[in-house]
Length: 232
Image (tube, rainbow, N blue to C red; front, side, top):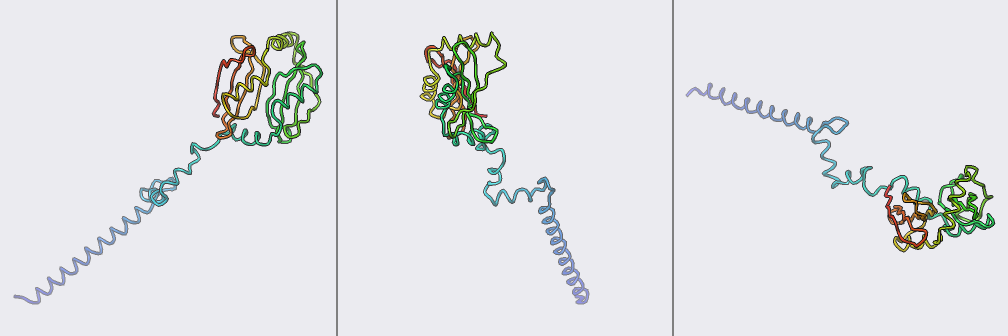
């Protein structure tokens, strides 16, 4: 046996094995680099998956599209209603007190010029002449009444007819609505529906979700004619 040749072969085989091992290491390093890299939009396979695995899926729960987020209208209701110390009925009482011989037509809780909540109310005398009165929702103080300059003779006659036919008061209509849905009355208005029937339209806001439910109530017999839930 040629020992010199055998030694050469053994050396050559060992060198080949070392080169192979080195190649495998290089491939592994390159693979790790490729796996760890990704574009800014999360295009890389491993880069986008690791955070989700480590935070238990909390990233998805923190998305802006989470179902628990309030809408703009819900946020507005949440900001206004708790600050209103004066209820709709007291606001209407202050408004009718500011206009002699008037009856309630509407009241709606809104944000005033100073950002604070106010009741924008409308009252009218028996001939249908309508006045608008702003009532501070914190103090109950009524501002100076403003006559509706856009109201013409036909408008007055129509409103006078509603007031005459309405046997149900705003307070009675609101009671019907809040018996159906426990919440805060944010608006009440004397109107007519598509069938020409005189109604009180009452908005009730629930504080657990800040949704608004509107009830159309027959102004002659308190019957609920329509219910609509506004989840916006």
